[in-house]
Length: 159
Image (cartoon, rainbow, N blue to C red; front, side, top):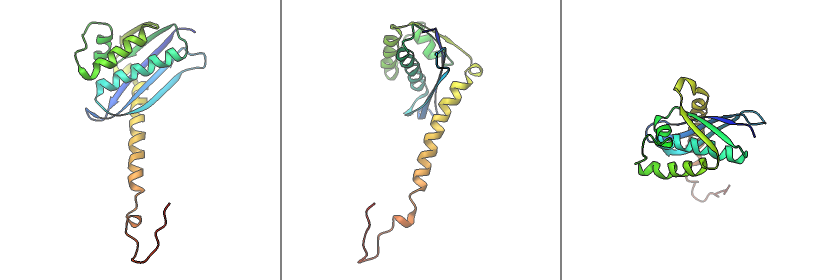
């Protein structure tokens, strides 16, 4: 397997808020891999780490030997390279998982500006927007006419 390169991003609408991750992996024999995933209500740093977990798991599932990751999160990059210690309880286990997965690869990570990480950012945002749109349409589907009690003596149909 050739070297893989991943661009990752995690984003939340609010901090914490509805969150998603975006991952773009280049170098696969089958072409670029794009991941957009809803991850629930998280803060932005958790979302960034979950994006890294996704990239690492994907690389391992492809039996990759090497993975270089580009992230626009200075926190994730500096914690993964050891420049910063991870002191956050909410990030510690994610940091540990990423280090454990990364040990199975020739792994490296570096910071990239947001302007050079736009595709991963678009994927992360689209995962959140898609989920929020589904949630809103589900609420609209609850037409008040169907929530009224049936007339006295009337039959109730169970769907």
